[in-house]
Length: 280
Ligand SMILES: [Fe+2]
Image (cartoon, rainbow, N blue to C red; front, side, top):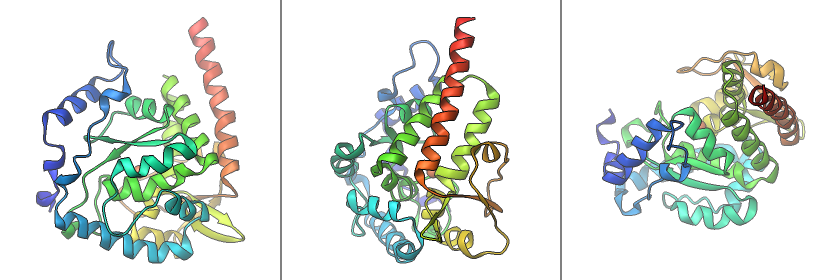
């Protein structure tokens, strides 16, 4: 099924060098996130790639108009997310950076955790540039540009979410405590990827895994099989998650301020521990 994934987009020396750097990130001399980034090479997208974007955009926006967080919907307008073409990352950044300082940066593929966190700590979002093949339009197990730009980036236009995500990156980058690393992975999963929020008494989706999934966005809001719990950072960090099927547990925010403030408190605790360990 993955035969028509447009690997030509990331099959060059620049992409190979960036991926090689990513694989060594954290080793001596490998600590510069800007070395992870590549050009989007926009002319590499095929007509079919563009059609895939448009089909996904139309189908998902029609649902999200009434079911996504208004912060997401406002953000999509602010960055000028459009149906008619895969977004040129430079166009997105031209609008996003003046608002919150965040930017999307193209990457060749999977980034090891520390390099990913280093990017977030600089308000840079590692962005997959390939798009899923048309025949796999409903499900792709790995991120693509629809997941990364359509799913994630609109929230980066919100100053509160923008602060939260950078604080997350700073804490995750600094800690070497595996207990915190596991807890932070869970926090990311249940908020950035699969978060729900209550707005004016109604449940809405904001997590990118829900935003970019036609099936799971509906399931997350409607299904009786989902245990929707009020967000509490400690509880979230203690909850294991499972991949490869619809999430049976989701956490519901009251506001993005709640998430930002809880993350700030947790980050201060983590960074204090790092300082103590470094000074011991
Ligand atoms: Fe994601």
